[in-house]
Image 1 (cartoon, rainbow, N blue to C red):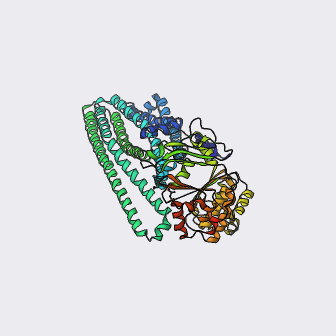
Image 2 (image 1 turned 30 degrees about the vertical axis):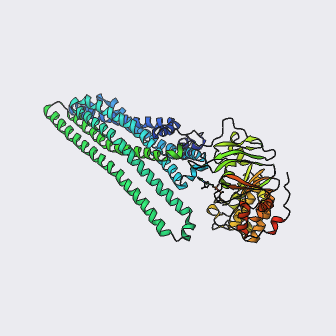
Image 3 (image 1 turned 90 degrees about the vertical axis):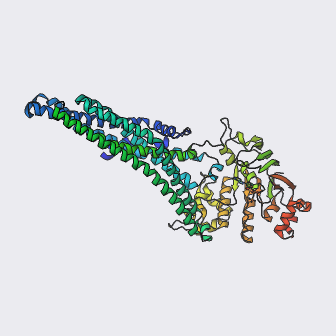
Length: 626
Ligand SMILES: Nc1ncnc2c1ncn2[C@@H]1O[C@H](COP(=O)(O)OP(=O)(O)OP(=O)(O)O)[C@@H](O)[C@H]1O
């Protein structure tokens, strides 16, 4: 171990931020959030506050010592004073060195190494754990970038301000009290203006605090709006360019930045006004103290040593009020930032596991929707008293007009939202009584808009089963006919094949390639239930045939609910359920429904131009488990 390791490692490992267990954040106001994080680090914070108070105590003692030395030397002469008071001089020497550098090192290193690094990491981690628990609806109401920026702002603001507060407030209070005591011991006439000055400063702080808080909050809100809007823009850059909307979007961003600047100016005005008041109060104190000091010297109620001591104390006090005021501003900025971020960090998730939630066990794969009623926040019913039983291994196709509730129904099965009434059961187990994790592990999803993470294509496939080996990944890629294009992949960083990155949301892959990766991922997951939200966009017929073939492979032996748009998929379903306004309006085998001449037949004819293709009249593949 190097010397540097020996000195700094203990400070660096005093807190292990990522090992602190997650505790839900209190939602009763920003101060409770601050206290929550303070309690997480209280040991180090107290140690830092004590070291910082030690620095102040040393300073005050040195000031007192100086006034004693000045008076002693003027009265007794230097050598007599040295002889009689050498212990005092030695003690002052010890305070100057090594006590002062040690205390100062402790404060700075707790500050930079233990808290400066550990605290934002802990706050960001705890914040992330809080956000991650939120249900899908929460993310739909917010810009992702805004959430991320709020977390980051909170992490740095809270850390800086808590640390500054613990470093400065106890020290400042000690300095105030110590200064008043010391000054009183020198002369009460000198202490009096200081007491008045402190009272005026406290009144000022009480008056300004709510204004600071309100303005700081507006600024934080505007700042996170800017970050959110910019992230939203960058994420949708392709669409923006398609519409050549860069200029009009830039106009929007410009307006948001302009608004953010206005709120910042408003915030800064109040700070400068209060600083001006503090400077005026400081100068008035100086004037009063110097007048009293000179009159004390003239009238003999003060010695030169006492006068020097008083001037030194005054210098420190007035200098520190300024720092203290700035710290007050920063603390209110932090409180504003927390207030703005509170909804993100403290909203309790609405979809939670029951305390007695069990793990879902899928033995057959039967799904039952029983009188399900659902509406989105404040809206009218999207799923209206719907009952549907899907037999084990059955493949049900959901068909209907756009907005009929197909995607919603699939999302309810995954418990992305909780239903208002009725029940959804898988093999007899109500999905609200099992853990969300076990539920979602049992369901494979191929969504319409295949989402891939900006990682290697191999890692994206591995998402289906993180512990899968490279061989298994290659095997499913082959089954999904993805192996050929993956072999040819290369990214800008020189990574090739399975190691090549796919771009944000998989942007560097074609729609068909993304779908193949999604199929491989679900093949690897091998869940007993499959939800398939078919892309409406037509792939070319060759790709469609290839994908269809792969999908058959994924669907084999599984209970399937497919939001079906393509004729080829519909034809492969055991049963079609036609949804309209959240209700089942028709149900049956596709060929039966065509004959019924209802909504399905209408949709069908519209899609085929009145032509009923051969495949619907062909015998349909038998469902394995029915
Ligand atoms: N997150 C949401 N918040 C509020 N309303 C929503 C949300 N998602 C969907 N809706 C509404 O619920 C209704 C059903 O939508 P859903 O997406 O389930 O229909 P769909 O049948 O899948 O349509 P499509 O075929 O066009 O995908 C629509 O009126 C839609 O506006």
